[in-house]
Image (cartoon, rainbow over all chains, first blue to last red; front, side, top):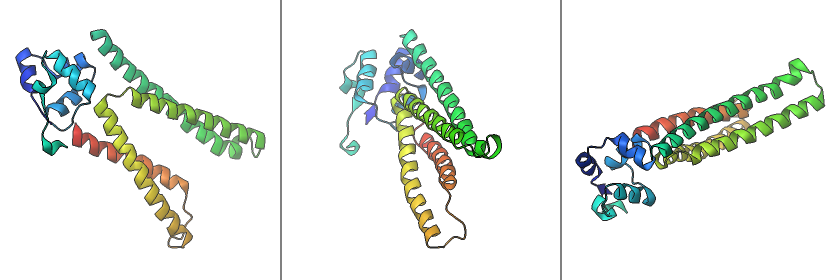
Length: 67
Length: 137
């Protein structure tokens, strides 16, 4: 699943640690999500989108190859 | 939000410490149950039985501490741990059965000991954890 977290985070000038702390996961988890090695759970995806004040579709893009 | 994060991080540290204490206690109680009857109370069945009950009780505590540790891991850490556990369980089963068959068919000249499986599980779990961490983190 593709995502725009790195870009959105840069716009807000947040570090991975800032974002991780804000949603209650480890920095490594944010790094793995950004590198698209790991797809977050739905609650985590909603929390991330909420923090950036975006809809979930604006942050995450599902691709058929992800299924 | 900061308070929540601090609580999460401190809870994780607390869980790891608790798990380490339970694991150490279980190891010591295993040593007591194994060697106590040989060197401390020399064949007293009651004390041997009590040491085994103690060992089981502490073992249950260790398992529950491990479950608590897993529950408080974040979703990626949980995935890494659970995949390592699943691989360890599967490989321990197939290697254990193969090892037992080697013993029963006299393919190996020594008896198949459970301690082999315990060591295998520990080492395999560590390797699986390293592999999974490299894969995701």
